[in-house]
Image 1 (cartoon, protein in one colour):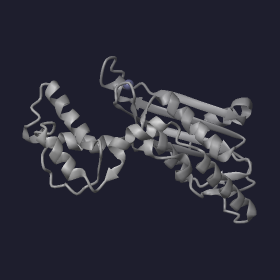
Image 2: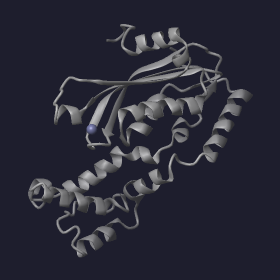
Image 3: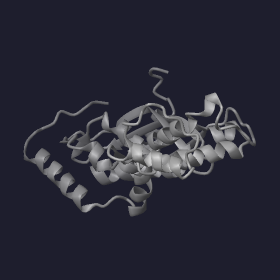
Length: 266
Ligand SMILES: [Zn+2]
């Protein structure tokens, strides 16, 4: 495993220009992704206080506390989301007015905006210009990438580790970009299977490598905390492309390494 040195010649620049052009051609994965999350995530400094005041006037935010953070950035939908959380608390039989819960609605709104910020991010922006021409032709792997996401069925967290490997085909990406790429897709409502596929597809698209392998192992709180209460069951998913799918030796090597076969640092 090694990080390639950028060979800042024509090829390097060419690759970057190509990437930039591809990025500008490509629209967000779905228009809906952006608009629905805009409401919560796109901060605006000009309106929040007035927005909250309005919401208070018409009764939606009767108990939303003034937390002295009137100048913080709030997305358009933040006050609306907080009001919804407040209603949720009441439906649960709680008293949203009691001390400990007074600031909860806005806290939850902010936390949710943060936990779903991946909707606002694009792989191309995250990778930026960290693509380098490199003739290295062996497997490059980053293991044990911390991962936190939320299942779309219960909106409860699932967390674990991602292991990513690829075989370069003329270019490599800065190693630190792989964890950031995981974040783009993990910070959304997800199912683990799709998350795994999306990470593999993104690497395939950006790097056009000879092969990609992604393994995710995660614990799902919706399984651990409720219903079946299987405290120790870990879900493992994998997505294999190119050489990782077609060549059994490559596949075996990858899966061996992904599952801790190297024996290093374990
Ligand atoms: Zn779930």
